[in-house]
Amino acid sequence: MRKFLIVAVGVLALATTGLAVAKGLKAGKSMKAVAGTFAATPTADVKTKTCTTSDGKTIVASHGKYTGVATGATAGDADLTGPVTLDVHSVVNTTDDVGVVEGKLKIDVASGKDTALHFDAVYDHGKLAGLARGHAHDPGMQVLANLSADFSATGFANGKLGGGTAGGSAVELGPGKCAPDKPDHPAAPSHDTKEKKDPKKK
Image 1 (tube, rainbow, N blue to C red):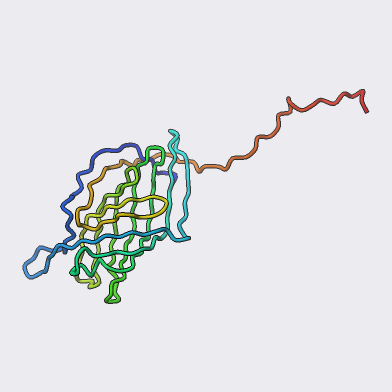
Image 2: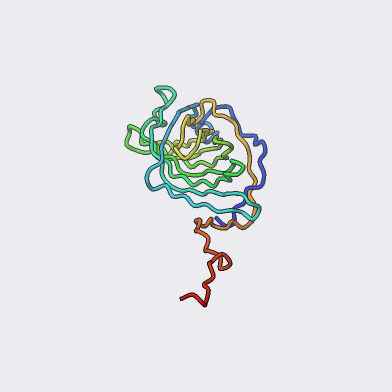
């Protein structure tokens, strides 16, 4: 965490077509558009560390699991329907409210096998936008999806996989020092303010 320094924000040309498509363009392979929504709240194991950069920015890094429910947009989107678990690592510059979030998203579909995706996203003022890829419950069926969501200490809300996901920003990360924040301690009394004892008094 000491090496992270978020130094700029700009516009990122993320695809916003709202499609999650099967990977592979060779003849004979299937391909269809799918979409889903999700929401998840943090579990008790989410851990957070805070540090301050040399230029006075506060960096908050967290890692942990979030659980909730994913729902396919249509009856044909069964691979995006079921209990969802996200294993997430985030690094956020809370001074400027920008950062990066990456992790794994698993959906326990009715077939008993998981849809498993890895995602990388940009965080900007409470919003995530990024890309997720992995496989459906059938490991031979690959999935590539635009991902967006609201993200905060309370978890993920209004999450989307395809289906009109929102575009996002870009962050630039470079080398730098980030010193861990120290808890406040009461100041020691100054010797100058202590009452001096008169040696003539007993």
